[in-house]
Length: 348
Ligand code: NAD
Ligand code: UFG
Image (cartoon, rainbow, N blue to C red; front, side, top):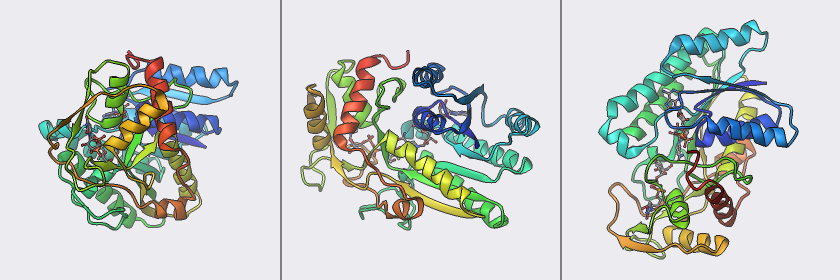
């Protein structure tokens, strides 16, 4: 089966691409490389080559806003007699703070880019998509665990673009309920790395998320961690989140593709998380215990837009996809540290 992975060179896309290739899928990665490095492609290839796996991977540099370039990919595949069955749509911009500064760019890339892609899919009769949505769309909800029917209330432009895309996908499905098969996966906090240490997360500049910040403190690229508040209404006063191992998350995409292929037509929104909440202090402790690295930290004021407690109800993913996360917080720390230690400067 042939799959197009937009944004397939990024953090989540690269881990999913590797798994798909290992499992015999034919993969085309389409990425502008605006937030990724070509080195990730070489890392994927070298892992598969070392494993003696016969794989079919094509990488194309391009922007999802470029319709003719997208159209050519679908048409070329049809001409080769090996049409694209489905798209996993990872491509997009994902920084909350950047989206506040440059909202039009976020609406253009995320929303207009997705609209272009859907138009080209329709023209080429490819009707299946797995979309990367985000738990950010639940906003400041305090009712945990968060299930898919909880109120959607995004508080930043990034989250608003994800809601707009989900609405567009739902409308498209309703316009032709015999054809479209669409699944929006609402990710919680993807963290960690491939166990080989060959691919991992490589944020540009100073990380804004907790886990890559911790690994960069551990490798001493950053002096100390700032803990944003120790007076939240949680067990130890620090913020609680749902950290999911990137390999568990990647497996969720393969199950989502299998789920779509088993249906005549479908539209679903599904949470992907670990289903467990861990606090910042628990995360620091687990990282120190699992890796032997000390993480010096300082308590700072709360960060704007943060919530106390946020973790997923994952029963829908378990029931519909037959998926469940298998890896522990300890495994997250070991694999994340392995990647950072092997690649102190990431891909650069
Ligand atoms: P990432 O930035 O590592 O990957 C996104 C990829 O898309 C990058 O390789 C980038 O170069 C590419 N890209 C960006 N704009 C493009 C364009 N116009 N045309 C083609 N390619 C383009 O991000 P990620 O963490 O892998 O996230 C993947 C998806 O999952 C994103 O849509 C993101 O919003 C969503 N998501 C991520 C998280 C997270 O915490 N990582 C959480 C929830 C949702
Ligand atoms: N935190 C710190 N110090 C840091 C970074 C984070 O104490 O340097 C704390 C935060 O206050 C929060 C927890 O660590 O309590 C997790 O913060 P992250 O920034 O890692 O994750 P968030 O849940 O706040 O946000 C992330 C993405 C959002 C996405 C959301 C759900 O940044 O875009 O996960 O998917 F919407």
